[in-house]
Amino acid sequence: GENVEQHPSTLSVQEGDSAVIKCTYSDSASNYFPWYKQELGKGPQLIIDIRSNVGEKKDQRIAVTLNKTAKHFSLHITETQPEDSAVYFCAPSQGGFKTIFGAGTRLFVKA
Amino acid sequence: DADVTQTPRNRITKTGKRIMLECSQTKGHDRMYWYRQDPGLGLRLIYYSFDVKDINKGEISDGYSVSRQAQAKFSLSLESAIPNQTALYFCAVGSGANVLTFGAGSRLTVL
Image (cartoon, rainbow over all chains, first blue to last red; front, side, top):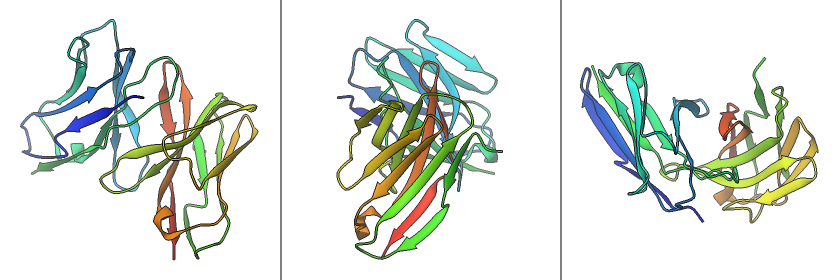
């Protein structure tokens, strides 16, 4: 089965700095690579995703990059703001729809 | 109305009691999931269902059972609750490549 690892587990940045979270997966058949954000007291919510035929995708201050050869993908947040403070999860999957989540990265943005 | 509704939101029970957590969705999608969240362990898949007649075990199905009563309803049961099942439980609905929409969560405490 899929083995998913996220690094770092905790990340603290100053407001305005960039944050990068990396997700490593084991299943070479994975073809869908999403990132979820979980705010306190809420369920996770999809913030950005990428398919295996694309290397990078950007949506305003967030971006996802994929390296299929090395089997990892990363979440990039630029110009961080206090409201970016949350737990972020990666959840790579392949067409079988059995989605396994990474352990999460807690991001703190200090004002 | 929320797309994915979980009830109850909070429940305190005693060891050995039977507990049912319910999930309903208004999105009309076939794929439904139950996840458990513990601090530092991310989201672990308990069971998932691709339609009314399809039930699949996830990573941690022991001690749990599910019922897909209709396309819109997917319930999780703990036949005899134990303290290490104290956790936050999330229901999710899958669509497209595998975009998951989560409910707000059900916090269960087993004394």
